[in-house]
Length: 261
Image (cartoon, rainbow, N blue to C red):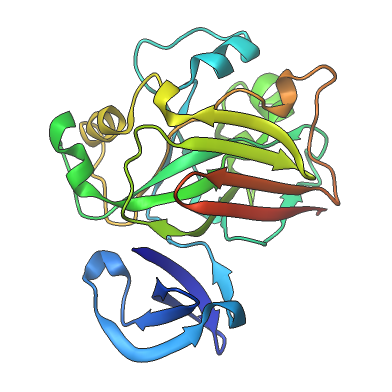
């Protein structure tokens, strides 16, 4: 099944997608599937980020190809960072180049896990049982802040609009071998597969749950394959007027324009 958040009559609602219509829900689907008698046409609403996460955890250096292109060191255990929830935006919402750091903003197409129920100390073999579904994500990053200016990643990864999500959550999906592709202005920039993750989804959920309580709606960005802008010669960074598309097999395509602040 596919679930979305959308705006109708000036109000944000959750819904279950049925072909070209949305069945409106009484509450977030993580709280139980309580449907109303109301439905709306998918084409007539504005889709929002499909979840309002209580926390956004992300994993760095989780594909060997990305490690190689970044000239980084393969981690012995997952490299965890946190993105601010205020960075979350939905499909077609603009990625905003921040006025204090507009020059080296980069894309990172990723598979995102959406947690469905409260979880702590989950064994790897049970980890997918706490998953509600999966969505597309773009771990937008200000590389100058990340690499040179700050000495850590918090600001670089968390400017407003730096966590596009969508277009919806897919629940009937195995995350083991999904193609991830990122296009910039129609040109293919990333073409990878989750089969090449160093730490797979089961391990990541278990590992995170040993440190943090995973609340319903928690988001886990699982890392990006090679092809990011900073590793190209010359580097390719986002500019106002660009359009970024992240496609994950079995889910769909997340599209966002780029604007200046």
